[in-house]
Image (cartoon, rainbow, N blue to C red; front, side):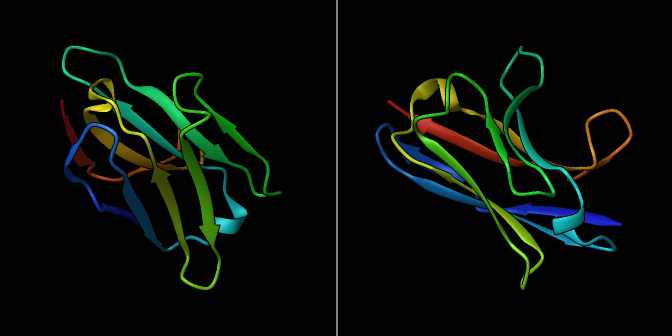
Length: 114
């Protein structure tokens, strides 16, 4: 099983980025897929989650700005991030199957300049 994130980069505050998580060895529509992030000196936190039945869940700080979606044809899970703030600066990680026993990607860095 492999989970690979892409799409990170440097963006100005107020801008947008779209992250993508490509999975191999699993079918993303059969797993709870999630994006987590870890900022400098901070604990890893849940950003957004999409369940196998399609329901979604968001962290309080992003729920009006970020959208998680799934493309079953491409076997990917995307995170559309709008109205980015400096506090969104973090390494973003894709997870399949839950944080305790699931699969993790290597992360992609998002830096928001103010």
